[in-house]
Length: 397
Image (cartoon, rainbow, N blue to C red; front, side, top):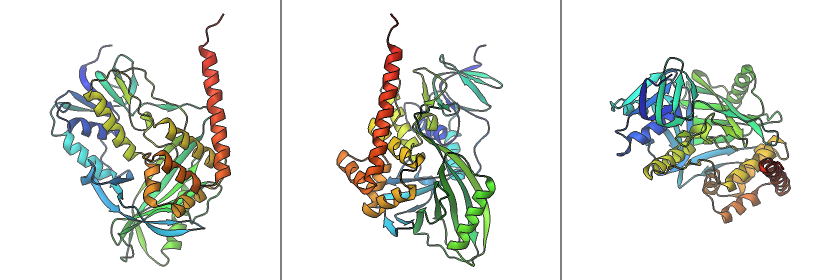
């Protein structure tokens, strides 16, 4: 079958990655006149996601920022404090604002088509097969189709969370302080914590987050949120305005984007934009989009590599090893980093911006033996994989 229409760029999937990519293209003089197609099953308009990230200065999506803070509250059984993030701001963007901002931009361009359909497959020759039609693209940005390889030597955790936007009857919240991680909750053998992100003296997103190998039952998230609110805000009446739920892979395994071609670029989680050891995604999507724009500007025909550097891939693997194998409690890892180090340095490290001498400071703050053992295990696993791959490449005699 032949394509019904041809495009310069096709964006398969219109979530955070797809809409960010569309905005970057339309914000650039070279690409804004190209024929662009955006495909998703439905138009994203609901307030179904909240993205948080830290950033210096103002970013491209600054008009979408609901609230931002330079004072964060961190809490754990061994240490609690309000910390300052300067020169970073911790920023919060709600899904409905991000979607509205991007769609308003997209609607200004007659050269952009939008199709609501299910993407079933993408072929190496640039064909995007949907349920009801087929399209061809010179370059395809894919965030819709991918799978995570089940590799025994890799770690497979999930970051899963249930959030309530709660509205209190009284103005009890300090909008100048956000709770980044409150580990003062039952851990149940996992790594569990709560965010509290106030958007007014009355209203906040309260989100219960878990790092583990499997999801909880829905009632478990609900119960944990109720217990937390009753403990932290005793005798305070509140209403739940709306809820959100999400799951982000935390893995060092290979992400297969279900295609193989120089003109097909995986973005978002499909393109390794979800940081393996923390699940943070939004800021890495923006960095990814900027790399892609530079790649296209230079008319670079080589396949673009959007993965983290080898250094940070290794750090992620080590941290996942420690958490997944319970070598050291997750809450203690973060507690000791924030307690012993300047907060901006911790954020810089988690943003993958640190130099070697700063990495050493980070390493000195955590449990030496647990991380050393994990590091050796990851090196051993990497050597084993490399040796196996090399053996498979040797010609048969």
